[in-house]
Length: 164
Image (cartoon, rainbow, N blue to C red):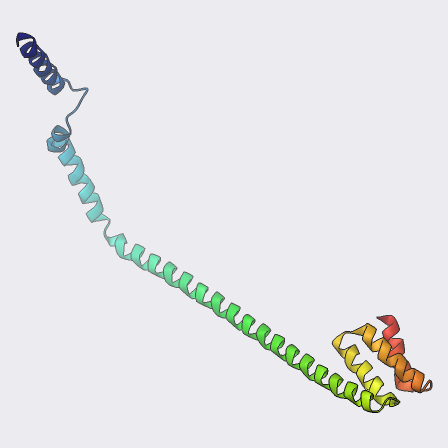
């Protein structure tokens, strides 16, 4: 028991030394000291005296935020318009290809009924050329030239196909 009493006495003595030692400041002492209160009051005075700039800063930041928002809206609008135009062009291209393919199917059914009709083969060759199927265009153009070797339009198309 005496040993326990000595231990508590030693702890009390260490605690008293901590309170008196300025190297280890107590947080409660810092808050209540005069120096801290003076510093805080000076800081408060500085903030209050510069409050006239507060409105200008708020206006400036609001302007920057508005400018960035408008810039983003303009950019998004420009991208949306560009996308709309590209989708329009794409849909027109698809529509034209479907129309050309329908014409090719018509002329192909025509060649199945009337085998020796040179104009049908030539029309298919032209349509395949417009689609960019140059090899098929050559084949149909050769059939047209086999049926009529003096066919001027087929000869002109043959010259165009040689360059492709």
